[in-house]
Image 1 (cartoon, rainbow, N blue to C red):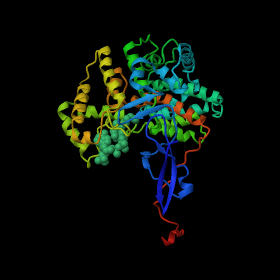
Image 2: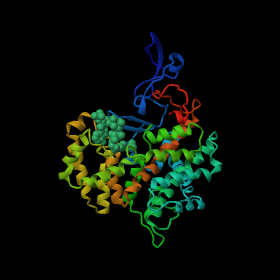
Image 3: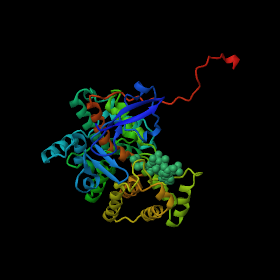
Image 4: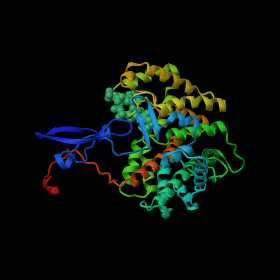
Length: 427
Ligand code: CMC
């Protein structure tokens, strides 16, 4: 603990302890504020509020730094694998070879879903959004795995976490297969986590599916880049849902619901749609003007971030990965040219410079996913698949914390004061 913060209110001075983490700003510990002063803090959108203590992920938005358990995202994306990053987030340290092998073995052997779960898919319209299906099906897992829902037992929490991480690719691939009317494919244990997902999505029972290593690597990297991101909206949703002691599968479904929104995980879909709408580079200035016009709701999707006021380090890796995937698949998509030019024009525009709006992870991810063959509606489902690792790691961290309490914010009430009921004939 460092020094104290002073607050003067109602003619009195109160002192609150300041707490320091290992990195990042100090926090003023206001847990006793209401008890001592009878006042709340007001912070809609939590722009100045640390909602928890966490050792998983650190972001310095001013400097464009993202660390998982201390390791920079650029190094993890370059040298690691999604399974290794998942192990790191769950277990605090990078695994040695035998730990990693055992982890992969465990995850691989949990990839199948209960056979009855297939029937849930038949209940959806074929044109249902994959995120609608994922919300429903992942929530439904709560009804299937009763042996891993005693959240006070660390072993059961571990099994639930492994199940969620392992089954997500199967569930997402099934959502895709259902939309295109092809049969579901069972997982195949000799493939990697990511290779397996690609086969379950793009393979058909009539022929062998060949995983293209460059695509597998790019996809794995995209998963790494989305694995965790501190206390973002969907992670906070999972924590809040979990704080009541709710079932982990249901909490993850809540995270999926939050992630779906266009201001969060839905932005990659929105960004690619926007790039298609812009079409050719000559139209860029018109859209830049629209983005700056306060009377126009249009925003540059894939630009800006609540935390990053510098280039999102994930966007740097994404931009590089676009080129790798295009080379591997021999794709030339004019939309990438439009994206590069849009980025350059926006970065040199005073409005974007003043507001510190830079490309975020979603600006380029849609271009890669589209080149691999995913329809735009699947983009957010892929984000959910990868973010499940972060959600369960954060959920585990919260439940293991002995000081954990149910999340219960307060409010600034602006409705009517107490008044008497008036019968309908007198209104
Ligand atoms: N285009 C044009 N103007 C923008 C944009 C944008 N993409 N983003 C922010 N602004 C302006 C905004 O109008 C506001 O202007 P003013 O101060 O004059 O009112 C100012 O910049 C600050 O924006 P804000 O909305 O108050 O900031 P926020 O921290 O609440 O929002 C954001 C962050 C990500 C929701 C927002 O930047 C946005 O809507 N971006 C587009 C959607 C997007 O790409 N989302 C993906 C986020 S990264 C993936 C993830 O973590 O899920």
